[in-house]
Length: 639
Image 1 (cartoon, one colour):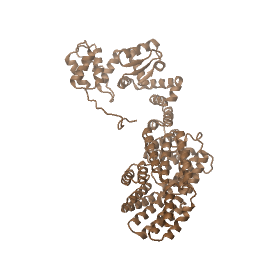
Image 2: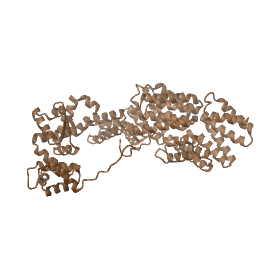
Image 3: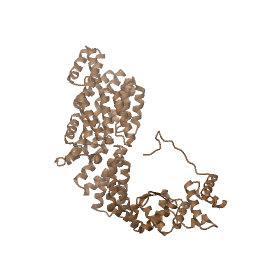
Image 4: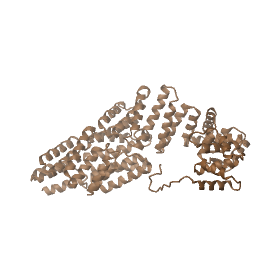
């Protein structure tokens, strides 16, 4: 996790040593050796104020036998360094290695191939030298201060003093010798350190890559990425998948290479979604590439997974129209019901699509089917394969949303609570984040803004701690909660920030719906009308019909506030028609309450009461929700 920007981290800028300080460090290291002032000045000049460079160059000069021009002798002993290592330091380190003798030099090179840190048992198997020679080499390196040693051989471990020391030793090896040593390390790891490879598969992948064993290296990078993703280390996983994709270029074209690329791209997608959110363009590109290859060479599972990823990207961009086509393709691919895991994910795509399109009955049908199919043990891998979150938790989230919209707020509360409890038991970070956000939405709809704020805060804290991409724009939910609490100015500011943010487009109709609501409550009817109509345009462009009835209702409230009574009545009647068409009883109740209030204001009290009483009486639960309380209060007023 990057340290910069964290509230508990203070950044200190460390300047280079000035000439006098550098000279003091040289004198301290030289002790009573008596380096001339010219030699000290030259060391300081070449070290460029970097303490490590000062120390290493001074030690190399002290070890040099050339009394007349010690610094020049050190620099002349080195071949050209790699670009990553400053020339003077590289020369210093190579000179020191050379003076330690051929055994120590070779042991240092082998250690550099293994890594920054290595154990005696591993280097012993790779070096293939007599134990006495190996110990002599390691002891000389430690005595020279190039290696730190912990413990006593054969239980000892070693650490290069600095990464540049390792780089310098590694840089002296010819390419063929490097490959040979990396191959030895890979073989030793597989044969004698299986537990280590299981814990850190990227170690074997690295050495196979450097050894030129590309096919096995690609497979191992895939394994390493999956291992990291299972630990929710998704940034690390992406790096491993990318290393595997980079290595593929060395393989000949054909079915074997394409098959490996499909698996890498499909595994990479969920980690990109987890870290960047559903709007991840990189994830969309990964799935598109996988789909192209799967249509040519892949199997049914690979094609399904690629199409699911593309559906997720479409859904993540808020484009329900494009998402529906892909969801229908997923349902078609699983029509034979041969694989209940794939069928579960086809329903997954359908319930999410129906949620956004405003089809709560179909949403409930698909999410209930998903809940019946879901098994937390058998479908454990789905969290990493499909969408980056748990399908059972998601099904619960959407069943709750559908029940609320269909007019069953108590059932929604129970099922939403079950989904949240499951998410807490499963302890899968992205799934828990989603459950918290969906539960916040449910409590907002029920009229409990304080509980919604608690859920939002918990989700944001989790996302920050786990470095998760946000699948919901939290400022839209927070703004809605603040509006419900009467903090209208803060609510409007929060909602506008959310709409302008990175995830604003994904949730645009919802955000504009909440903005119009906050502005109308504040009495800013002109601005509320603009927001509501912008939301309707966005809904038409994307197909997000879930908030269509509410947007028309708020349009009507804004028009009524502007004293455009006929237009207001038309908008409210349109909201009522849409809610009834969608079978969205909760939206029907809201639209009817607003229309009854308008007619009551016009003196048409009996007509208003006759309009509101049937829908209010239809509800059999949720009498403590704000919508039913408002309806009951209005009915009493009209009576």
